[in-house]
Image (tube, rainbow, N blue to C red; front, side):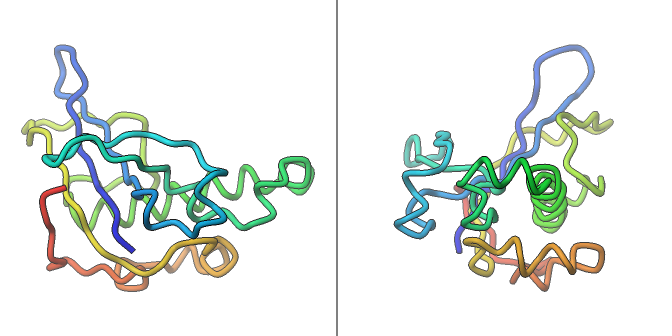
Length: 153
């Protein structure tokens, strides 16, 4: 599965950065595409429709919202998706050492904005298989490694 990792500078005095992992819509299963939040990633080839990692990882029962809230799935899905996102981001951006992706991160050296397209395992509806292993999950388990072939997004 292809993903786009982004590091974007947030305006202000301190060098604050936002980190995201987005998944292009063409990487989602056809039944899932119409059920997800659509965001646009700016790439050298133009704007590409994408979605959040949480919507990709979500089990099919997530889209039946009344069950998701009743079973406490929302909080668990948020935790698992933020942890998986942090693992992916750390494999690409070594300065992202947070256990869970924060809304913004202050970095002393100001590395600048960057965007990379990477490949990993298929994460469509992978929540049920990843959630029990979230404490021991590593980049290699996601099909990533530190020398992953990064391509400009």
